[in-house]
Picture 1 (tube, rainbow, N blue to C red):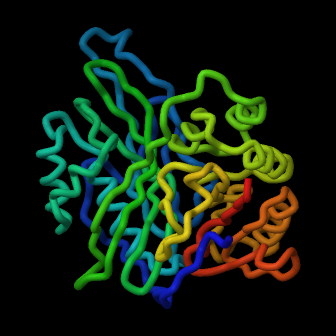
Picture 2 (picture 1 turned 90 degrees about the horizontal axis):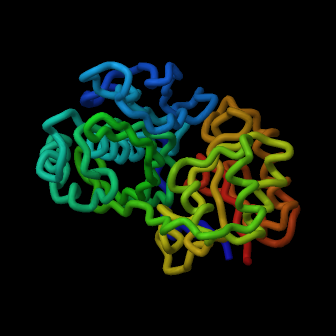
Picture 3 (picture 1 turned 60 degrees about the vertical axis):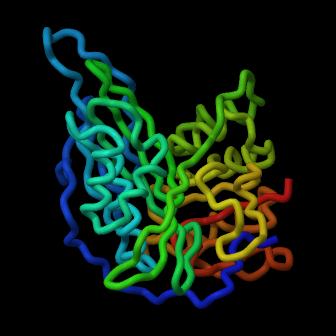
Length: 340
């Protein structure tokens, strides 16, 4: 079963709008550990760092420093950059605040300032955790589906919160649902990831994936692996691919639509039978400057791990019937799915 299946005509390419409303945190800065926190635009070469939790000791009366985050921008090569930009602006606004701006009421005000329904703040889940301050950095935004008038954008993010004198690193993935409206797309619903608790014990393949520096796992994806709900075939495929490539994953299980977007067919992701890759060897899949031969090689090697369902921006020949596919939804990532 293919994991795309868009029944309606996709939207066309559009020019990205770079001028957007500012958030509380600046355009570029360094983390508290002195490592640069970058956005995930076309030229990004790695995911933002995930600093360890810190406590405000050493300087009497001093507060722990939060990282600074950059505003994420879509690639000019996106199918429709404005859809992603709209989704990301909302998540950035919900997940970052200064002292005195915490809580759902303040979150509603930030949402309203974007011209969106303030009630969306009630669907923010862990993004509005109880904390004095918070900073959110979007790692990537990929399509969960894009049709003519509706879309799903999966916003992958890291978040740092400060309570008293302690800073904690976390983050999530949010399935942002949108519909076409004038003068721009509007957000209709938010579905934050729900990875579940960590398992008391994990199979060897899961432990190896968690420890492999060539497999970049954002917070929700890492929690998925720790939950013990990812099939061993999927984990072993990741490890095999990591023997050849450095890859950054966006979504494994949680935070992905339950059904293939625009259909009633169940997706492989919620069953722990698929993973998506947005960056290969430091090159974004969506970037037209990324060598097509790199993406083609990765897709064929993914199929060689046993995947029956490999999708990406390139339509490949060969393989078993229907093993490779390409559509607008998969223009920005490579999907690798398994039957079991």
